[in-house]
Amino acid sequence: MTEPFATMQSAEDTRQAPTTAVLPQTPARRAFGPVAHPATLASPLASASSNPVTAPPAATEISARTGRFTAYEAGKRTFDVAAAGIALAALMPFLAVIAVLIWLDDRGPVLYWQTRVGRDGRTFRFYKFRSMVRNADALKEALLCENEAEGPIFKMRRDPRVTRVGRFLRQHSLDELPQFFNVLRGDMSLVGPRPHLPSEVACYTPRQRLRLSVQPGLICLREVHGRSNLTFEQWVESDLRYIETRSFSTDLGILARAVPAVLKAEGAY
Image (cartoon, rainbow, N blue to C red; front, side):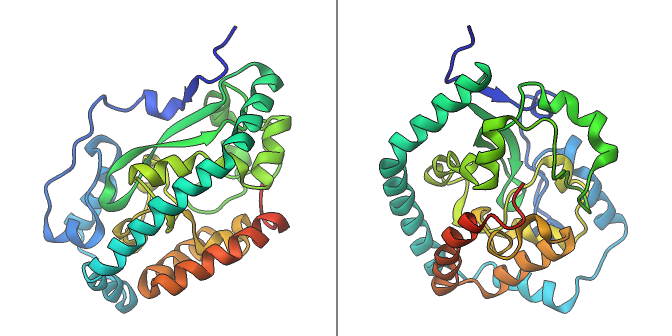
């Protein structure tokens, strides 16, 4: 019998090199964020180096602002740790119930993890409650032609890999709750751009790479403004708008709107 609390690793992670190397900082990489693994993420940087791209004025302003938030980021980190710790303590019985339901559904692993790209191109282990069948990554290749999302991401409204319990978890974002542990570890913040896979980041344009200039988050503007109903470009622009205007009041406003948005489940699948 499978260990009920085992962690399932994504197929993409098994193909990555065993060690992570951060490329040397250059002016171009400081502007657009360094690559976490040369073999996986070299394409955008190589393109930017051989064919320099001048970022639009808004992007330039965002890039210049990223180093001027020391006090804000210190306070944000303190709030993240306190809030995530309280949330995990309060939700622990609920998390245990979810874990049991997932295991009872197909006797498979409860948790699922992938490598995601965070601030400045650093990679980290990203946790979720498993909401798909155990061989979901192997099945993805056959479903690529049915992708309903624009850009480098993959989304299907009726993804056949999603389990019965998983469909409910995804609709109400309950599969994301283990990411409170990522927040405690410092991999993520409560509010910030959602982290993407290395293969997705490899397809970023220089402007899209500005998402990597801040800590990724559990909740972003997209989560309270339509979620998967937004195009990838709209998603990126909302993230850049957040980066340019971020503040304690902005973060608190997004957090306050998160609960009604999750309950409404608009654009969630």
